[in-house]
Length: 313
Length: 245
View 1 (tube, each protein chain N blue to C red):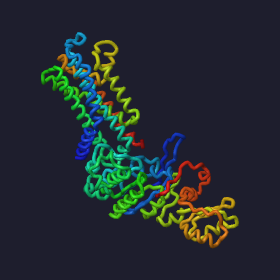
View 2: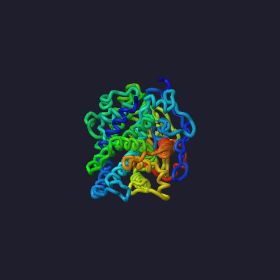
View 3: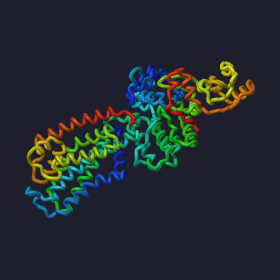
């Protein structure tokens, strides 16, 4: 399986309530077998639409998808793809174990049911009816359903949405266990922290385009994880951008905004160089601003912000 | 062969869905006892020479089994809303195996409905020769084919919010126009009724009632045509239904 996954020139629009929505506007991604890749972006970036095209749930308007040299449908039929879609509940009136047996029966070479139950951390819930599970347990069963075919490609669309902190941690441990078997994993998230902690590589999407693609550390440096706001009338923006730990600098009147890859280093350097800095605020993950900056699309940057980015917690 | 284990668990699920199970089996039975229980002495309904308990037993056998078949639509609409249908599309489960599981489950419910109604009829003194029972049951099972497809089609077109009224309204209307509640013997309603698949479902029951000869060429043709049309429409509804709900 050296061919990996190829998305070539994918374009997809669909009809929305206020005219056509250009969900994906031409993206190219190549993923090698065995890679763990995060598809990072705010809501509405086109992540789910991209995943739907990868899985064969939606046909692209233009472009092509190849999964290990096959079409998505052929790859699904061969049991090469497992997926946890963004929205989804479970069917009722089966126990967790029965549901996993039922799904395993659909595949040519499934994993042993007890192995799936262990991997997904469902030992204690295995005998329970699916309608009696907590949100976090439901997500784990959905993960189990995604890996039951022992797929070479595992696709997860915002898998930790319904989970508490502990649930998230356990979930990512399970995901990394699976990836460690030499499997290819693609997951969508809008939490930079999740991408950083769990992926080798980040593909950053905004408004239907890929705005950055590279090793996690590189993207993190570009995007910045914290923002420093301060009043500093007499500093030069270009000089501020050169400070250690700062990714980009901006000025609005007397206020400066520094997007930081390492805010600890940045604040020390800032105070050392400009001891008269006032009104300092350090805010977590100003990701949306960072996305907009990376796209350099001023029109959209001024548009009202209708969606807020969630913070990983 | 794939799909067998899947079908088995679909059956298990249908029998465990208590509210659905009790209601879809209980409703025709309750209706039967309400109508026929208090009129068990009527041996010549509207001058037809047919006893009332017999007339309504076969009438409700056709109505109850039709309900059992199309209520598949309600279950499918629920699974779609849960996102489960999309999850299934990321598995090798073929459309054929998916349909088979749905149809087998619907037929299991329909068969159970028939058996219970026959038992209820017998308890009110209905008695028919065994050969007639079998002939009637066989024709009803064939006559249910269009409704198996209709249930799947509705399930993939309608949301959970509207599926209840759609199924309830449709089945009541079909039952009325097909002579379930009172005999339709002439006029426009007769002409219209004979074009409906549910008409022939009721006629299937008449085999046991008045030594009727079954469907004849017209009945077979109508049921076959509706089956073909609804299977095509159900397949179309399933294929187009790939969106997030």
